[in-house]
Amino acid sequence: MGVGLHGEALQEPLTRVATGDGIRVEVARVSRPMSRSGEPHVGDRRSIEEPLVTEGGPVDVLCRSVLREHQPSGRHGGGWHRTGVVVLEQYQLLGDGEAGPVEAGGRHRGEGGGAHPPVAACRQFVEPAVEFGHLGQHRLVVEDHVRGVVVGRPRTHPDPDAPGAEFARTRPGGRRRGSVGHLRDGSVTGVSVLFATHAAYLEHLAGPRHPERPERLNAVLNGAQRAGLADALVPVEPVAATRAALELVHPAAYLDRIEGISAAGGGRLDPDTYASEGSWNAAVLAAGAGLTAVEALRRGEAASAFCAVRPPGHHATAHESMGFCFVNNVAVVAASLAEQGERVLVFDFDAHHGNGTNDIFYADPRVLFVSIHQWPLYPGTGRHDEIGTGHGRGFTLNIPVPPGATGDVYLYAFDELVAPVAERFAPTWVIVSAGFDAHRDDPITDLGLAAGDYAPLTRRVLGLVPVGRRLVMLEGGYDLDALANSSATVLREMADVEGAPIETATSGGPGMAAVSGIRAFWEQQGLL
Image 1 (spheres, helix red, strand yellow):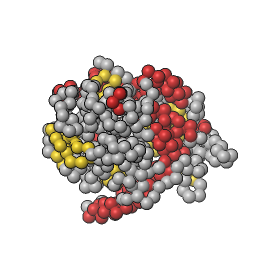
Image 2 (cartoon, rainbow, N blue to C red):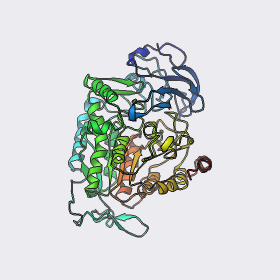
Image 3 (cartoon, rainbow, N blue to C red):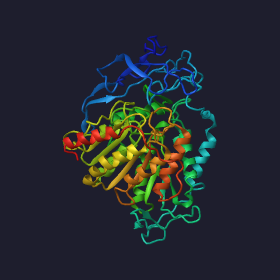
Image 4 (cartoon, one colour):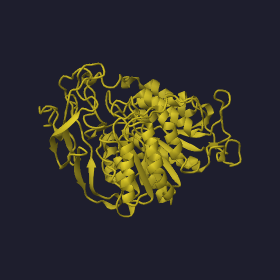
């Protein structure tokens, strides 16, 4: 039996998770601080204390994680890596059994573990979600976007001299201006941005009141409308990734397992990732979105591409689902480009470390992986000294920042750490793992960014490569309004549209000293 918050036996046995999944669970004691409303509750921010019980491996106390060993398997590698802490609260079971009482204001803490508490037990989780039976309205909205009814109509420009195909003209300040435009406030002209999404993403159901819920997709679509981009967004319908493309990253047996569970009606893949009947189709379309967008960009159809996909992917390792992720969408695209001789920079600004992408390219010099993320936080990986191995040494760079870090810390980290390394690497493509859970309103993280911070950060990273070689793919972000505003901000920046920020950029938070310390370490290692 599992062990609950205070040592009580959970009603759901660990054996419910399929044998051979390599489950490693660390149960942490959670203190009971005062909530924002003044009421004590379980699992609020900054409430994780010492571990109580650990099964299956030694504990790295500093990053509160469990170590596990992988056997090498061809191109998919192996070796030690850290997996995340799974924090179990009273109502968070490993299965669908009934939970005990939950104190007022109880909240799921962290992107992992017990992600399917009974609806009645977590009524107060984040914010009310619509029942899954009412998804028809959301599906129509998505389909409208795909058809271009809301955000623009599909356009192609096979002639590079055709109106609307001029993306490389530079205006003062070095920013790009194209001739495909629209008027905003009567005068602003932007460049075209591919917008890839699919109604099938709504068919992935992780469970009632789960933070990675279908409403997230609708929030991004609302953000596209808030951006006021009119004809600048060019809808693209993703094509499912082929098995050959997926197997550049994930072994066939791993993919077969997910497909089989989904085809059988769904089931739990690991303690915090659940597949429904529609999950496999959604996952291969999510991975395919990036590949479809790359081909469209190569045809000159837009300056950049934004893929509004779910499920997310950056926690998925070659062999394991984790943190709501099935297929590593960004890694599939990066691996495909690398196979074609491209030099790919993957920049991950999700609040959670992209451990899957990190592991997949840890020894690969063709892909420069850079992650800036909260520390400590699920999945417990991404220390500053994780810098790659073998020929890949120096091509994996992690920038952990403390809770409360603000946008100025992110920009300082980019200018001091990322920019000089990227200049030396000379990428030919940039892929952004765009998780918006670093926003100060996100319910499962502790960072202090606002939507306005994503504009200068996006401008910097996309400016590392020419237009037409820029891809942004959605990862996390669990406050719906913050997700909409942040998506709108990034889309405006991608379309080169200026205007008043939706939210003011932030500054004054902790983390500058941490960035300076990382710079000193990288200099010692010869990385700068």
